[in-house]
Image (cartoon, rainbow, N blue to C red; front, side):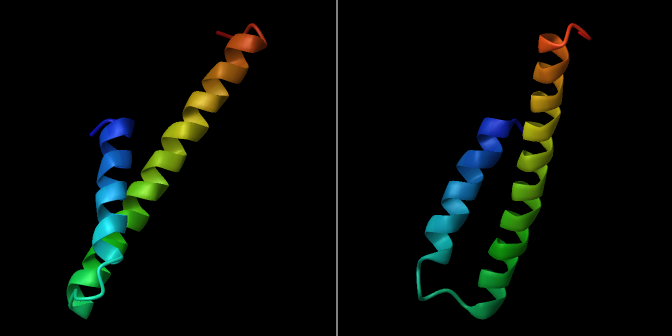
Length: 60
């Protein structure tokens, strides 16, 4: 899944979590998926930032 796809999925999860009618179990599943996706996105951003820094510093 690409970064953009993960962000899109996160947006959908947030929209679902904002609905008050979800059962607790479903809410927890969405929350866990959202946390996992957020960690993956943060890792991708950190890797991209490190690569950009390397290019700026002449390491790439």
